[in-house]
Length: 358
Image 1 (cartoon, rainbow, N blue to C red):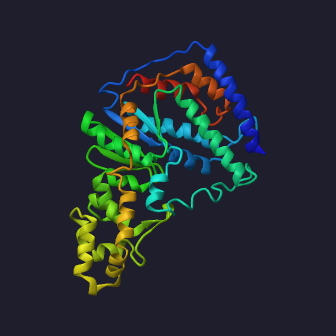
Image 2 (cartoon, rainbow, N blue to C red):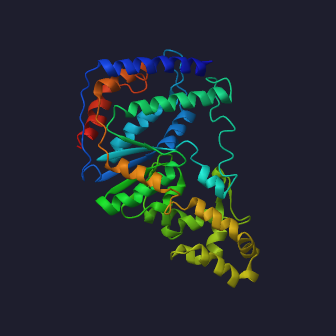
Image 3 (cartoon, one colour):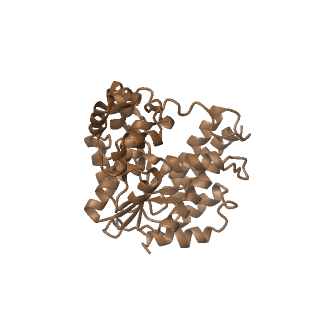
């Protein structure tokens, strides 16, 4: 019932929100895209951010609506801006049918998602109730971006991973940008370079090439090989049975010091076939491994010409203005005041500064 209540409240809030937009004389700062916007860019994996907050914050507003995912995500957004001090921010969502292309390579890809609840409190009656709350709060979260100096991207049949990967490659090349990606997803580690870092909120650690090498004891260019061989249970991608991190380093010592290709892995396995049973498994599953590599390879994102054209347009479009009154109205309507206690701080020290590129 709390979730259904939220949906009723959400619909009412949406109507009121549109009325407010037509009546409020907005105070806005509109910044055309320039080189300064792309000087230090923060790119956030939106649903990764949202679901982490939704699953951990059990917050009910005065109307009885669960708003933990919404309030927590807004707080996280502001905290990330304060932490990284970017000149420009992109928030990237998975599109409708985002897993389609990867499911063509691996039908069971992410088949374990959405089949169980991610919360364990009494705010929701069942899985459907929880899913309704997710949809409602994500939609409301997107509404906030209409009044913040942040650019939002989403493409049908494309994952956020692919959009972010494309941007992480193009921005440093075109604008000499310093790019900071934000996600708990380790797949992004294959993209780190001297101009691209990954911030993982769970561990509160920034990762560059040296950090990847130190933590995983591999050459940073080999992270995609590392993932392909070990698999990813969260995405339903199987690795080689009996092969863990320590065994991988022992059987393929070059992975620690020099860049390798999947072909190098197969050749080494052929040359040493009689020395360990894992080598035979690798050769037997060669086609599977090739598919898994392609599926996880973010340096070659799975995007068609239409999707690339959308991203190009997003990079060129004007920065969204900061609409102070609109933000504060949403803040009051959603009842997030006792979670984000000082609205003036968020307006003045976070979003206004971002809009002014200070």
